[in-house]
Image (tube, rainbow, N blue to C red; front, side, top):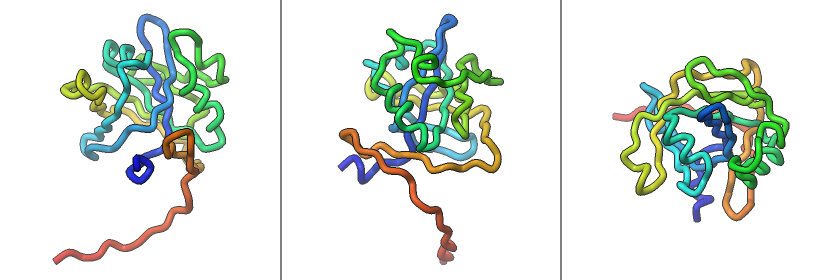
Amino acid sequence: MCAWLEQGPVVLVTTALRGRSNIMAMSWQTMLEFEPPLVGCVISNRNHSFELLRKSGECGINIPAARLARRVVGCGDTTGSEVDKFTRFGFTRMKASRIAAPLIAECFANLECKVVDTRFVSKYGFFVLEVVKAWQDIGRQPPTFHHRGSGAFAVDGRTFRMPFAKMN
């Protein structure tokens, strides 16, 4: 059933606290608002990244191409409390301009985010983030991949446009 409601691509969330950085694979995020750009995401309090994000109040959302799926899933299957995921999975730290957490150079788009609402964090692990800076490798928009649940993934398909129907 959750696969029917799947919203966006698998992304890599980067966090940093006290000189240590981490990467977490995430597939529970959604756009909440366009102006200012707000993203809602769910991070379990059982994840190492939960405390890093809660305490630092900022993170990077890094959007990988489908060709990085094996490395991304590896990040999701490993805890950052025990291993440096940048080293283990061959990701390159890239300095962000508005947050302390690094971005990931191999990703074709990167969002620098600040936590702006924590009302649902304790109960649901739901953070509201404001995108304060966005980066994209111009000319690149490779296919992303989406988690369908229970270890199943789908690669996004072709893009098409349709005119909006005029409303009376």
